[in-house]
Image (cartoon, rainbow, N blue to C red; front, side, top):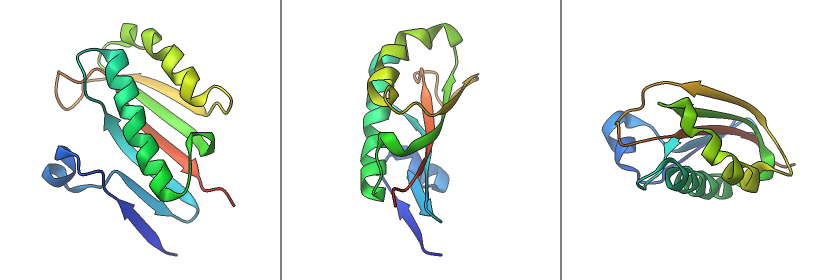
Length: 120
């Protein structure tokens, strides 16, 4: 089995020692991804754009995502993200979980992790 590692050059990749995504055995595992911006919706869209780039480099897209986990320090901030999530996943909804938890830095309002299956 060939393993492909995809880096986005994010600051935490080098600090912690991980890559944005790993392609293995027909699956794309995208690491938890935070976005830039001052509020949860801006960060949500930014994180999804970074995830989209990793998926594209892996040969997949949002329609191939089968599992997504959303992590937020304040669950009340999840609902404002719903229209953005429908924009990205609406026609191909994945299995989903939302976890309320602390993130690596208080400035981050959402972290998104996805798993996709490569199209045959």
